[in-house]
Image (cartoon, rainbow, N blue to C red):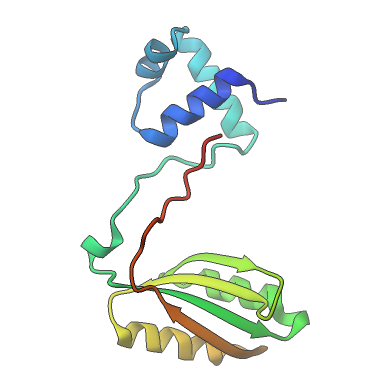
Length: 148
């Protein structure tokens, strides 16, 4: 199944406000409520929509530190290391990358002590050779919502 212009318009509205009802979306797009229901169901079945969530301000929740951590790992253990790290409650993103490091992790912490414990726990994972941690001084933009 292909994604058409109506699907993209629905996605754009949901990206802005995932609380919109089918009725509100239908009214904004001038189509039947049943059409909206069917389209959203199709997008979920296709895996395009993976869930509905809220956008949080993590600093206001006490997460003062955002760290970008490069991890050098033994090649055959990279996938397992990524799975282990991805389970940690501080981790928001895990990327398998090219370049000097094999894995890039984005994580949020309430304190330097939390970050220190996390980095040391990563270093203790079998196959991790080294880490390089950068702390964000200011978050200029942090928004993973792209136009569909």
